[in-house]
Length: 120
Image (cartoon, rainbow, N blue to C red; front, side):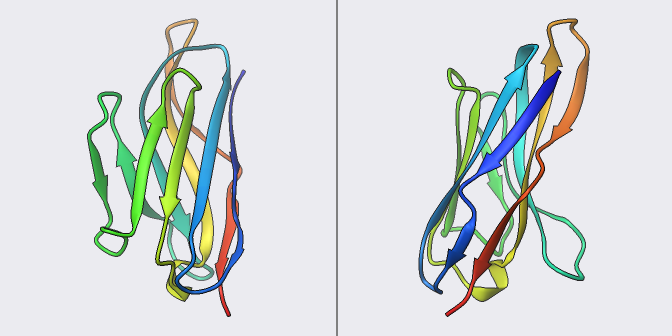
């Protein structure tokens, strides 16, 4: 009964910007830590950025200074602002969240993923 739905992916030129969103819905009691992951074709999935329930963040070295993760707890939404995009940022981006449901059971949930393509 808990869903994560991403939006905001697309095609962008090198140097451009995109903002990804991940909206959580369903029988949610509390959203704990959240994160963005990406998987490029032929590669393993990697952590891009992570944010705790208190707002502490950490980033992969490859995106530090270019990407910003944030969350709006009232809207139950996670964001990833991506700037100065490079072709190597091309991947399927997925959000992940540790969510406690109204039955007080905690699980990890994943969105369906959104494609980001950086190309001229």
